[in-house]
Image (cartoon, rainbow, N blue to C red; front, top):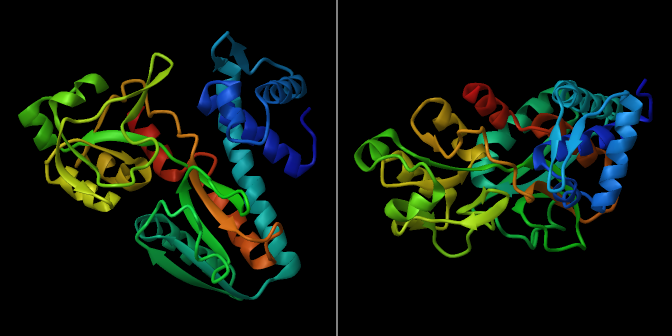
Length: 319
């Protein structure tokens, strides 16, 4: 029987889900301050506690057993419930009041953060939030810290002086409009992108843009002609919707258009690509956040992880 401290249980199940999504102990280890062997030992310990084998191990990868897949569904629900229960417990015991100041990227803030914060504020009437939306999603320096309590960012973490709390994974998907694919054909392999028009980042591009995992290796393939270059993901989305070419964009941005059929996913015959090793996270200066910030962080984690709702909707639609 699996009985342990709730925090330990959340970490154990979260690590299990990371191994499942990443496909190897080494890839999962990169998401935690752990070595691959430490990840393997913790999974062994979890399997012993559960009483069954959750993963089949091979030289290069780990694959979930049927029992592991079934366990994953319950694990996701357990993690979400524990995170929410912890947030509610903090709220009831402390009933924090006051202002939380947040700096966040505009596109993600409008689509996902603002609705989540609105629901959060309904639950906690003693709290207020000052949300500052900015255009850049890749300002890694967190230059506004000190003026605000939390800074949301995406990508690789570069400043270890700040404390980061992971909020959501990022899945990036190649996509195009039905009209573009009708006129130019649908590529069946990323290598065929060189025969197509595209929409690409002008200047500092996300680390995983136009990178695809093929046969266990990460390869770079991109369109030859760039019809629209921009330093803003929403501008690239507009070009894709207009039928200008193929874009490689995060699912948090394009999920709703894929679900409505306004964009078509490419190279997803086996389901969604694996999440990037980078993700969406909140930065703060203090090692221990104040009660207000801690409550919001727990709420956002329960809302956006372990699998973000926009990816769950896509997974369901793809069968």
